[in-house]
Image (tube, rainbow, N blue to C red; front, side, top):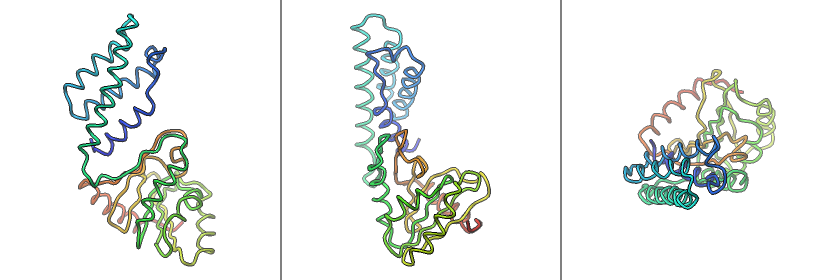
Length: 242
């Protein structure tokens, strides 16, 4: 699993940890959280912590003694935090990104602004669910004279995008914008491609970024980034103007 994904999932688990000192250990949601957490601790690579987490998880669910149950809850939390700290400390220096807690609209704006402002020639935005919010709230964060390219999917795109594109093009002479549509249901990623070389993954559509669930914006540093670049260049060339 990509380290970007591991870090995001661990942050999300920490942000959404149920209150196991209450009744959460007996709910489907609580047990689902424990299962996800166990999988991510294992994915993070420490077999000792993975085994310890499973033992603590079983005690959180099945221990009737309140003292031992409390100890198990504390162990679950400590292993999760220790795992996150270890993975984050071992991540490469050029692994950049931002975790955005649910409901933090300003943090979402700031995270995107850091990426958009780094572009000097071109911003290529891939979002199947693009709508007017992409242009109203996020596109102005790019510098003047940077070409904005928006690729959306006709099956998912919102009807508000086309009039927003037309108004933008008529109003901003120094902010060039092109918007195109792929074939229906062809798009699945949400990406920001900066200057045709840096690929950033956005875990949610710009239309609802971090509104109801945590999100992240992280740089794609693996060899797969080049594959995505080539793939989306081809999609853009074949796409139809909106």
